[in-house]
Image 1 (tube, rainbow, N blue to C red):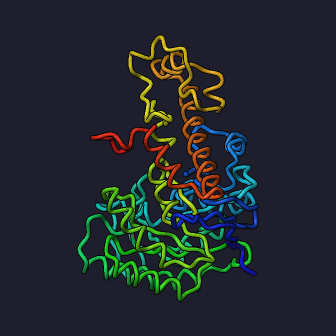
Image 2 (tube, one colour):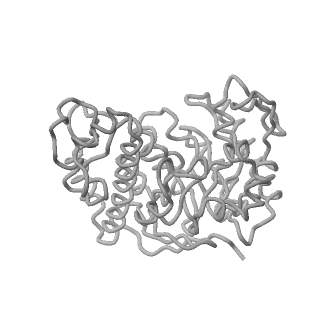
Image 3 (tube, rainbow, N blue to C red):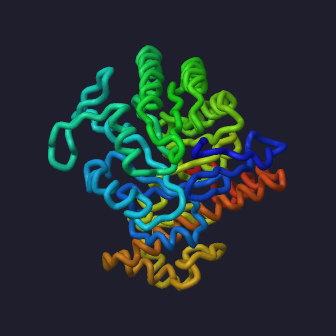
Length: 379
């Protein structure tokens, strides 16, 4: 029995977008979907009940961080990650690879795996495909990710080719090591940078291994938006239609819409909560930075078009005061609003696909948000 399956509901007539449902052992969720990130088994400053209020059917947690603290053995003893953090809906765990590969000055890659130093205390550690599977099996997530090599951007064709080949070999080792296939679905990760030939090679290698789902890795790592869209345009058609497609690390409103247009089903990013902690809010008119003096006497909501808890109850002036006074409640209100904004955006994307008007929706949203203006910022 496959733990994770994809049900295609409808294709958009104008684009590659699709409406679907991903079924997991802890419930189903509609796609395209944004997954809030709970790196340390918590979505920063938020309660699980609040995430449920936003209709999130799945969240993401981080294998690397949970392995180091509190440790996968403790989470296994607690009955798995769902019980440990009191979340009864789906959870996706990443492989830990991205974090290890970002420790560029503290790690060494070899065929067996990656040697690196624990960023918390400097201890020497080793992460391999087998170890990543063991940790994720202990965590008990619904969707696990294969351990892949995460190359830097930009990287030469030769470097990327060797990296893709290693990722394919590691993917096979992950499948062999993954023991809990009836309760946890393992997704493969397509790499290849901006090179179409290498993306095709990676996709063919991984599709031949018959994972229950596939991710597009190696994007949102500093490349320009047009490069990301070009890579999505040629990569998503290489992915099976009957499996979920996941674009890793993407969460800006424009990228969520463009990714959906290219046929992506799942997205995740720390962006909404990270910018919230700096006092930055998504609004229908673009980003708003609340600390500005002009908001000191602004008693209107953050976003007049938003019906979230923050916007229904608190003014810009009050929230600015909270940030100026370093009050934690301000971080909570900002995080709630930004996550709600993206969850509502994806709800509208799904509705637009139902009505075959996703391109019109994109045009309207981009116009209002300010993407279409000359010298528009990268929102």
